Length: 152
Length: 361
Image 1 (tube, rainbow over the protein chains, first blue to last red):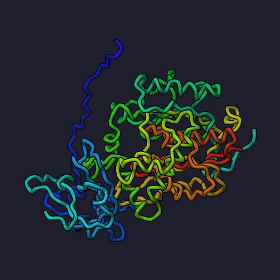
Image 2: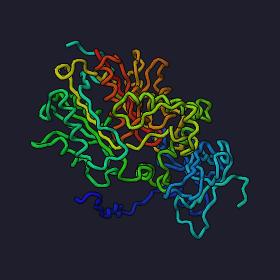
Image 3: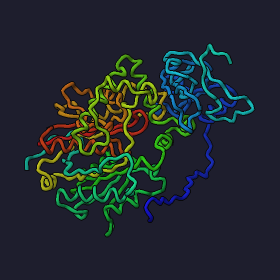
C-alpha cells in the first residue's frame, strides 16, 4: 500500500425486522400519540413510568395502566453545552429525569437550557408535545420538556 | 506449595497466575484486533513458560458493536490458534465476566488451567453513539444519550444528595492520574492539582473533562490455574477467594443512581468484608463512580484505591474490568498486597457489577 493511502468501503448495518412493542410499551407510546402520559402499577402499587411489563425492582408482573402527569418534577439533570449530531436538540440542552405527578419512577428526556443554571433538581416541568398531526407513537412525540411556568 | 486460602465462593482454589495487557492507546491504527491480541497472548503464556496446549479452556469477552461486524470473536481466536479444536466460549461482556465463566468451569474440576482474554477498540466508531445502543430501545436509545450524559445525571444526583461535590470529583481524578504516572501501561497520566482541574470546562455538567475516562484501544489476557497447578506456574498465585456479579434494572429512572446495590450485594457474596482489604482496583470510568463504589463495598480509608490509576488512566472497552483483576493479581504476586478487591462494571451508570476478591498465601 502506498504510504498515505487509506482504502475505505461503505458498510451499512441494518435491522430489517418489524417488532411489535407489546401491550405495555405500546400503551405508553400510543398515549404519547394521544398527548398523554400513562404508567403501570407494579409491586406494592407503585406506578412505573415509563411502564414496563415487569416491576423494575422485583421482576413481578405489572398490571393496570394509570394516567399520570403531564406535569412532573426533575429528579436529576445534566447539561450538554455542545450537543452531538444524534442528540434530540441542536442547541445547548439539559437531560432531565422527570418524575411525572402520580409516578414513582423517572422518565428520561431533554429540556432546552442555555446554561446549567437554567435547570435544577426539584424543578417543575411539563412535556411539550409535537403537533398532533406529527405524532406517531414514539418517544420523540415529546419534543422536549419546558418549565411549568413557561409560555407555550 | 504454601497451601490455599479459605474460600467464600466455590470449593476449588483457582488463582490468577499470569496477566498481560496491550499498551493502552487512544488510537491503534496499524493493527487490527487479532494483531493486537497476538503479542498479549504470547506474553501471558510466555511469562509463565506454557503454551495453548497447557490450558483446557479459552474464554473471551468482546462486543461486535465495536468492531462493526458479526462474530468478530471467532476471528479473534486466531490470536491463540485453535487447531486442533479447543474448548472455547465467549461472552458479549467485559473480560472480567469471561473470567467468571472460566472460574465456574475450573470449579467443576475437569481442567486445571484456562486462558481468558478480551479486546475492544474505541477508535473506529463514535463510542457515544455505539454505547447508546445498549439502552432500552424504545424509551432511551431513540434519544441517543451518550455515556457521559448519563454519568453526569448520576453525578448530579450524588451532588444533590449532599454526599459529594465537584471538588471531590477533581480530587479523585487528580489522584488517579498521579497514580498512573507509575503505570507504564497508562494512557493518561499527569500531576495536576484538583484546583487546576476545576478550571476545565464542562464536558456535560456537572462533569468536567478530568472526570471522564479517556477513549482507549486495548486488550488484555489472564491465565487461571487451579490447585497445585497454580503453584507450578506462579510462586504466589492470586487466589480468587470470592467472586460474584449482580445487575440492576435497565430502567435508569427506576434506580437510585447515588447507590450501587448490585455492587454491595456482589461484595457481600464475595466476602469483601470478612478480612482486611489492602487495595481495591475499582472500574469507575467516571470519577464520581469511585465514591459510589467505595460506599457500596464499605471500604475503609486505609484501602489503597486503584493504584494503577484505574479506568481514569485507561478505559479500553471490554478489557478495563479484566485489567482491574490483573492489576490486583500483580499486587499480590509482588507482595504489595495480601488481599485485594477487583471490581468490573458494565452498562450505564454502574448498572452491572462484578466483585472479585484475591488473596495470596
